[in-house]
Length: 109
Length: 114
View 1: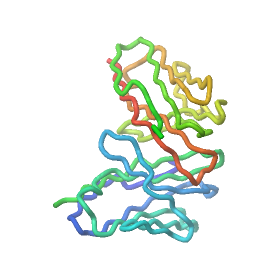
View 2 (view 1 turned 90 degrees about the vertical axis):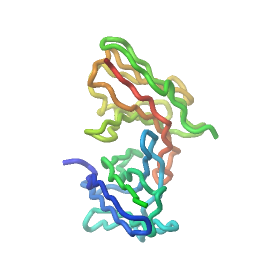
View 3 (view 1 turned 135 degrees about the vertical axis):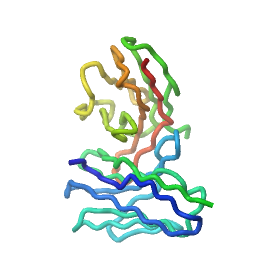
View 4 (view 1 turned 180 degrees about the vertical axis):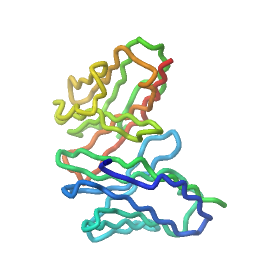
């Protein structure tokens, strides 16, 4: 079983829509969680950390459910520039990250 | 801050040749990671270093792969001999000694072995 699993999509949504991605992790000892964004043929870049209490950064909201071992990312009022692949990350001891294979989002005009 | 610097950006080589990928982490970052990304398997951790010492190399596919970090500002990933199945994008990333800070990736080396 993979450490982190995501629905690969693709998600095709119109501009202005709200879209949500979920990601499950297998190791209950995972300590920290993140969402990364990766544009086509570019490196992954940190989008936001995911805190136990949930956190918001503008149009983006991340949540963690430890009981069910999943994290989520909500994007409100989607922009064309949000089109990318979104990678979720769970860590384990030693600063080691496990990446999901990514969820592809295309925002359509 | 120049970020994590990788070279070369692209590498095309023939099967059987030696390939060396290079990485300069962000100054002050204690951790350095080498990842490989393919469409089929996503991002796979190959090896990581803490304070220049290899900590976990369990992701290195086989003996053809080796990595070194002779000092805090430089690391190499070597493949010898290279095979077509090694074709992928290889990313180097670094982080400070706090998990919550996340990783910073270099722009990657796109390797094609023909």
